[in-house]
Length: 101
Image (spheres, one colour):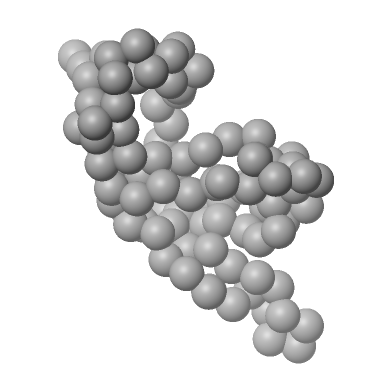
């Protein structure tokens, strides 16, 4: 079974990172699975996570009055999302919904 460090080493986001930094990130990381249709986070909630996608796709959506949820970006395997945790007020401005496992 692979460790979190092993999984992180194979993600493009961590390419070229020093081992010490990789271990620091691994100490804060959790491996999570989202079923298709489930939400990683919702607009207005606390932005307190960064997501590195290993598999699947995630639709980033904004609610448009009279039209409902509108996809403005799709994030895929090997990409990351969630830099909002770096910027005040540390709240998600959009929804993130798993399109594929």
